[in-house]
Amino acid sequence: MSWFESFVLGLVQGLTEFLPISSSAHLRLTAAFAGWPDPGAAFTAITQIGTEAAVIIYFRKDIGRIISTWSRSLFNRELRHDHDAQMGWLVIVGSIPIGVLGITLKDAIEGPFRDLRLIATTLIVMGVVLGIADRLAARDETGGRHRVAKQRKTLTDLSVKDGLLYGICQAMALIPGVSRSGATISGGLLMGYTRESAARYSFLLAIPAVLASGVYELKDAGEGHVSWGPTLFATVIAFVVGYAVIAWFMKFISNKSFMPFVIYRILLGIALFALVAAGTLTPHAGETAG
Image (cartoon, rainbow, N blue to C red; front, top):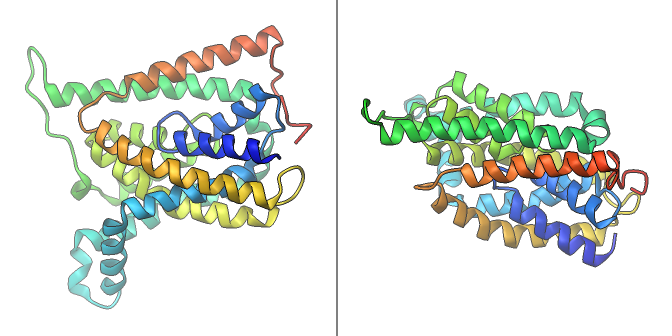
């Protein structure tokens, strides 16, 4: 991998990680469209450490409070009913599904799941799901001609069952094209949470999974056509760009619809199917070179 390729892929990772459009799919598609080798699952997982570092810094006060209260609650019974202590446990519970499935499906994640036809399918299907979830949230928030606005849940209402359901949604993002934030935010909206609460828990929940995945894949870094230097460079680029994107996105979702992302996902999926059908791209474009 050249330094230019690593710069572009790091930029793509930072731009797409927090948006509900799938960063892993865009890394795969960027390489395929440019005629570059598939960067691979290891490169993707390691560069995601950069974007998660942005999450940690952006939510540093929340994370510090949760870790502190959760740790003290292990020895202080009175703190176990504190919301921050409960959030610590809920993040752990929500991380179980992706941890189990990530190890179980490792070979599929690095192989069959990177088929461009599957990516096109997940882009479209999850786009439709996000669109439905967004419409339901908008109906509750604004009410309607014959109904009053409905109060949606916040993170103070988060239960173990909901945390586990969030975790299952996050695990779906092991398939490129699903989108970690898209799946978890859609799940949160369908469970009745506000947009801001769904996004906030989605980003907090991703931290253990992404960091664990990135550290696990470190052993495979530097193998094949992707060397250590470009991988680290892409990770730094992803961090800088990712921080700017997450700051913008948290403001965007407070009063905006997800429909632009829904339309983008569906159009990209359709275009990808058309390119594969026309023979412009092969379903495994770049994989043999990688």
